Length: 446
Image (tube, rainbow, N blue to C red):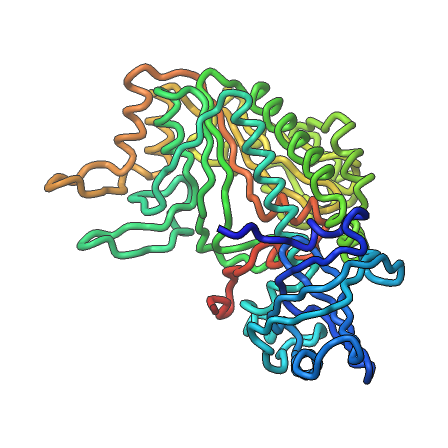
């Protein structure tokens, strides 16, 4: 099998003056009458190439003139140094193999969002968006790496579920043969079952939320990185989250320096800011103190209110590091969170700085059977039924079984990968953190 040659492999001093070969797509081109300048891209980068009319035969010259933006080709030629070129190198072309000349490209770079969405399958070739995807890849890879090195097991929970982890009104209903099923909004309950055999587990799954929010940080389908650990209390969970995210950010900075350099001119993200987030300790702030601070800033909010996007944005702007906002009132959080006995639960929302708000929700889980059973009744979840064979049983009966047979203290969290990426890349809208976003308003194409 032939070894592929990528642009990054030929941007080397010791190859100057030698023949090189690359395959790629036409990113930019200029016809100068006796020369045609191409900027060629591949998954690893870009390089300038020049076809000189006097240096090639008539067929090659005519081929060069026929290309459109995004035409595909293979070039062979001599590598030269040229400080004027985008990467400091240039290929003086000797031969061209045509794969597709291409047709006039429908995107010029200044289209409205509806046009971009119509051609999303083509728009995702945009260079800065490719940078985003590479950063996102590294963030996830390095996050996984931390958990693997720390002794966690990756597991594969189901996507089709019979009941909700949190709010049953936010589920997408689907038909499962002759039964009613839903698209998962969280793997948490299944991860809780797996800690009794594996101890510490994590998963990456798509999650679906049928909520009506339409903001810069909401998606109806997103990638959910979730963890669950036996014997972990809230303090242990917060420590693991801070260490793992800092590890992921720090390694991504090293791996994606060129991508961050490109993004700086697009989004304003400076890696010095990210390094500060890694080096400084993150803030732990109780919910009641957060409410007091918001009130002092003139925000109309009271104890017992959940924080919305605006409140989170304002609160994060008061600090230069992420905030673990802890100990919310039980009424505004899910039934499965551990109750302290003072009207609060052992939980946190991790709020990203610079106004980005919540990227993680986590808590110590209610592991005491009697209290969990009481809360399921209080939340009226005991009225939900599912069919198992020919028998109809309570939807959460299996979840209560986890507390009947060897229950232990345990904790977990869920990170929205796109929200994490949006913050790290300093993006304005979450739709630009994944290739095919699912949003309200007909955004299901392609």
